[in-house]
Amino acid sequence: MMDFNGVVKQYKNFLYKESWKWQMNYDFEELYQMAMIGCWKAFMHYTGEVLFLTYAARCIQNEILMYVRKCQGCKSEDKQVKFIVNLEAVIGTNKDGQESLLQDTIGATDDDIEEYGEREIKRKLLKKLSKRQWEEIECVLFKSTSQKELSEKYGVSQSYISRRAQATLDRLKINYLKEMSL
Image (cartoon, rainbow, N blue to C red):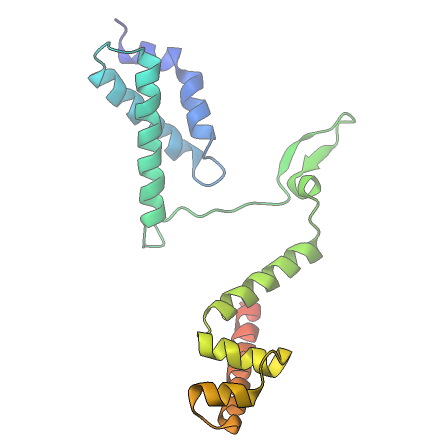
């Protein structure tokens, strides 16, 4: 029977591997500490019924998952782990010795990234619309149904539908401009 330091030495690569799986989203050092805690718990509670690595793997994975769930549930800004990707991060070198950047690998240009950001803002704003607001905007923009049909459906005048749709469009425009300026 080994002591805990011997166990850590023997399974050091496994601890790194399990921590590395989550390192893009969370702090690697924190993950490695969680893996060590899982290994310690496995060491303390191991009964010998199965291979130690099998038992330890489950304990380590559970400890890391508990940490991940805790981070996802954090409400305060100072405790929450943020997901940040630097597109200019060096991810390796090619045959010629030149550095390869993450943005080269995924093929995204600044315009692509900006366009994606705009689409996400639009999607976020449109999600806030009620079903009725969405129908009114569709009516004005795409003419899928007439304003008269909507007015009959909701029991209001056609001009009311028109005013509501215009007001919704104006609010969307203002919110979009606010989001773009952030």
